[in-house]
Image 1 (tube, rainbow, N blue to C red):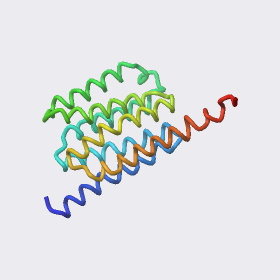
Image 2: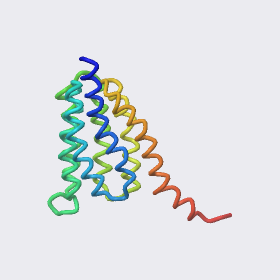
Image 3: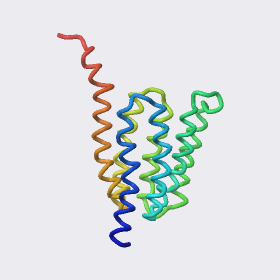
Length: 178
């Protein structure tokens, strides 16, 4: 792979990473989901160019997941059966592309993200996003998605800041003073 191709592939992974990284600073669940749809498509292209096929498939399932979560306030999309199906599809992604234990990493990450997006509880959403980062960071380093790995470190910090801003800071102020 030429240096230009390598840099172009890294740039392709950087764009959705930055969009996703900043999306959780939004207080809007629907805005986060719309941005996730765009990111899933761009990441699938990025990982495909790197030959990281587990991530290509998991991002395809992730796009389907984002559409379901966007509509999960509607009767047809409320069933918890969708969550079970999505988790099963992620496991299937690892089986179809198995090349070692590292293939489980994006599946674990996407499972956390699925649970995060399914809930309407924003503190739980932010916590699950925080938990999705370590396995994805490891996968990105293993597969050469270095721009995504760099942003994943920033995402960990962003998720922690969002948890502090929205979930911990307000609770700390409400604690009784002794």
